[in-house]
Image 1 (cartoon, helix red, strand yellow):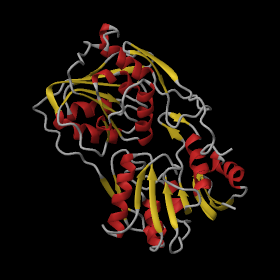
Image 2 (cartoon, rainbow, N blue to C red; image 1 turned 135 degrees about the vertical axis):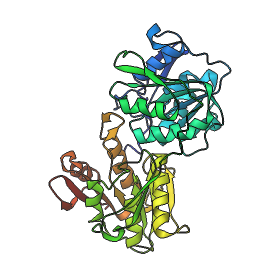
Image 3 (cartoon, one colour; image 1 turned 45 degrees about the vertical axis):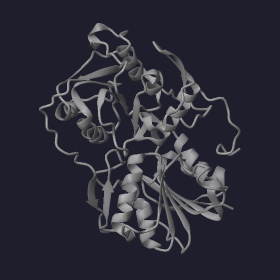
Length: 403
C-alpha cells in the first residue's frame, strides 16, 4: 500500500521525562517503522539545567517565569513542548520540525498559537530575555540566525545552547563569541554539552554575510553561467555540488504547459534550469527547508525576472493537500539521505511514493543519486519500471514513468 494513502498508524512516540511533566513526542511525519527519537540527550541536558537539576558544573539555573523566551533550532519541538507553560517563541528553518511541534503540543494538550511558531524567514522577536539554541548541523545557519537575533539580545539576556559533542566545535563557540559575547561550555553529560554565552553590548558583529551568490560553470546546460543565490543552511551554499552538476547535464526539456516540480529544490538550480530550457512550463519548487525555498525563489527570479510565474512551497514532499493525484507532468528530484545526524531512506521513499501519486499517467520522475543507494530498486517496486539515463562511477540519473 502507498504510505501516502495508508490509514494512520499509532505514531512511534518516545516519552521525555522533565520537571514539567512527561511528554510523548514524535517526529513528523510519524512513521511506525521509524525508530529515531524526537529528542536526544542534548535536549534533555538543557531542560535539566533550566529546571536546576543538572550538575552544578552546568551553571546557574535560569528563571523562566515572566521572561520572553525564544527557542532557536528546536528540531522536533521537544524544548518548545516541555517549556509550553512559559509560552516560548520557536524559530525553526524546518517545515517538518514545525509540524512536529504542532502535533507534540496538541498531544500535550497545549493550544497551538501560530504567532509563537516562527520560521527563520519571519521577523524575529523585538526583545529576547532567554535565548535557547539547539546547535544546528549548519554552522552557516547558526551564524545567520545569531546575526538576525542579536538586535533583540540585551545585557540581561540569558543565552544557553545545547548540542551533542560531535555538533559543538571551536568554530561554534567562536560564532557565539563574535556575534553575542564571551562563551564557555559545560562538561559533557551523555555525550551532550551546554553552551553559556554572556551578551556584550559593546560588540558590533555587523551584518550577516548571507545570502551568498555564485555563478554556475559554463558546461551545465541551459543554466550555464547563471547566478545561484543561497541563504544560510542551504545544501552546498558555497558551490555547485557534483551530484547536481551531473543532473544538470542530463535534464529533460519540459514541454509547453507541463507542470514541473523541483522536489527537494535546495537553492532551486535544477528547477531554474528546467524553466530556462522550457520557458512555457509551469514550475513548482518544494522543500521542507524554509531557507531552501527562499533561496530557490531568489535564484529563479534572478535568472527569469521578478515577474516570472512559479510556486514556492515549504512542504512535506508532494503533500496530498497540495498536489492532487494526477496533477503533475514531471518531477525532478535529488533526494537527501540524512535527517540531521542519522542516515535514512525514509525521506527518499516518501518523495518517490508522493511523486507516483501526484504524477499523471505518462508522467515522469527523474532522480539523481549516489550509485550505491540503489534507488533503482525502489523505483521499480513503485513504478514497475526504471531506466538508467546516465551514470558515472559515483552517480546515476534514473527515469521512472507512471503507467
